[in-house]
Length: 115
Image 1 (cartoon, rainbow, N blue to C red):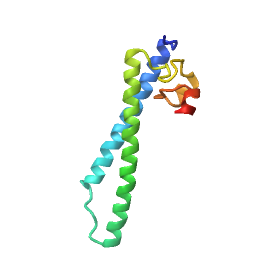
Image 2: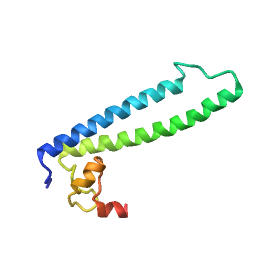
Image 3: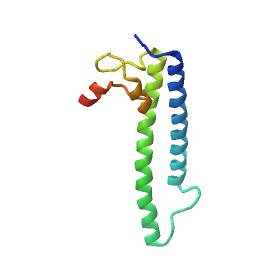
């Protein structure tokens, strides 16, 4: 049974959707940068090496953003089926403070320690 109020659910959905939009835009910009649509790879070897090192950082940021997007999508699915505020491990409510800090949390504080 979900004990979270409709207002809290609406607020959580809005926060998740806003964060998802932000991350999707970040992923789009990274993809554009990695395609070098704005500026091709420099011909100078040291400059090219710096750009390639930056690409590795961009790829790590992209991977992290995509991982968070997956968590957000899962949280939105949980909202749709009414299990958003319920721990997937023990079935107890996820604390409001935890949901506020980590809106896509799937475990309560205690179960997160064991996960």
